[in-house]
Each structure stands twice: as structure tokens, then as C-alpha cells.
Amino acid sequence: MTGTLTTAAVPADGTAGRSAEELRLRRELAAVYRLVAHFRMTDLIFTHISVRVPGPEQHFLINPYGLLFEEITASNLVKIDLAGNPVEESPYPVNPAGFVIHSAIHAARPDAHCVLHTHTRAGCAVAAQADGLLPVNQIALEFHDRVGYHDYEGVALNLDEQRRLVADLAGHPALILRNHGLLTVGRTPGEAFLRMYYLDKACEIQTTARAGGARLVLPSPEVSELAARQLAGEDTDSDLRDEQAAALAWAALLRLAHRIAPDHTD
Image (cartoon, rainbow, N blue to C red; front, top):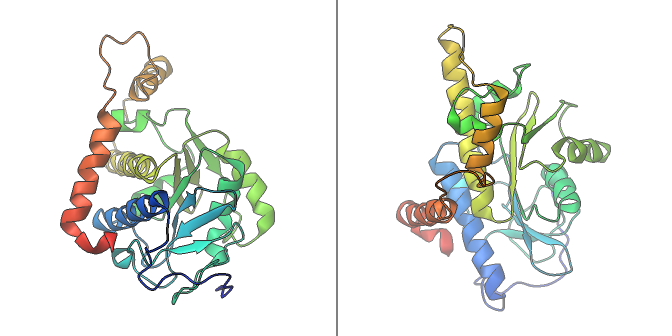
């Protein structure tokens, strides 16, 4: 499905006349697309990463339908409304059906400025396992009791599924879509990407550990909860805390994006 609605012309260079905040978001979102491609988390032209544009209109930026993630730039991102229809002229189509999951979460979670969805091998493997994500490793403990699960209902084309998606995500930063894939949300594109990077890494570790066939050693629920609070910076009893970790990691990733895909800011 594609949308062709046009309500306003966008300047030919894709940047003139835009607010500084929208330009920043466009460049950060384009960087996330390139990073997802770099770390081999794509599914060709399928799956999406969306970010809310500031303002009362509830407009969002999303990838042009048909472009590989490695082709995404700040200027070719498409601005859409909550129904997935484009609100500016663009030479590219959009896929409103692909925005069904994203629109539900954006509408229900004011803090979910960015929504990132993947179909990675490890993510799909864990999404098919009855016990879901296990506390196999410290990386997984970031998501201990902080990830929702949504049962598979077929391809997400029915709007009625949106309320169940939202209920299953609840207030969590991540959602495992059974028999489908992974989803993370964030206040910024960087936060959503870092969560996805580590959620997918946790799934890789779990599938590797299970492939060995030996019985898994798992920490107790009490230790798992402690580690989750520590990793989230919520444990006030810790002697040491790292307040800069996420900001430093995102800055390093932006430098990586500039090295591997300097055109993403175009």
C-alpha cells in the first residue's frame, strides 16, 4: 500500500525552511538507519524506524518505501501523519501499512518519540521461544522484567490489533513480537538504537548459549533485578555510577555513521 497525499511542497534540497530541531532529528534518524544497516539488522526495504517531529500536528519522519536502509539520507526521509499519509511532496512512496505498529505506539506513549522495529535472525529466534528473553548474560539483564510480549496475530495490517500492541508494550522500553521480531522505543533516535543494539545482542547471546546444549546457569531473580536497576542508573546504593555512558556511546556511534556513510546528513 502506498500513499500519495500532498499538502505542501518541500524545498528541492529537502532542508531549506525546516526548523533546526527537525534538521537535527532528520540527521540523527538517517544515522540510525545507516547504523542498523552497518550492524546487519535490516530486512531489505522492510521494517521501519520512525521519529516524532516537534509540533502539534503529530507528524513523523519515516523511511521512503523502496529504499534500502543504506540509501537513507536526512533529506529523503518522508514526513507523514498519524495515519501514515505523506504531508509533503516527495518522489518516494510511503507504506501506511508498515506504520500500523508505529502509529499505535506513538499515539499511546508520549515518551516514545522514536520507534525502531527489526526482523533480525536472533531476534526472531528468541521471539519464537516460549520462555522469551532469559537472563543469560549481563546484557540481557538491562531488559529484566522490562520487556513486553505480543502474541502473533498475522501480518500487522488490522487496526484493531493496535490496542493490544499498546497494552502489551505497557510502559516498557522494548517489545518482543512473538513469531515476528523486536521493537524498541526511545525519547531520542539514539536511545531507541542503543536499546535495539543491546536487545538484539542479548538475543544473539541466548541463541548461541542454547546451541551448546548444556544446562544454562541463570542468576537469581533478586540479582537480576539488582543488575537491571544498576544498568538503568536506578540503584542508589551502588558505590559507583556512570552518568555519561549513553551519551558517550551515542556520540561514538554518530562518529561511526559519519565515517561509514558521510552522505547520511545530505
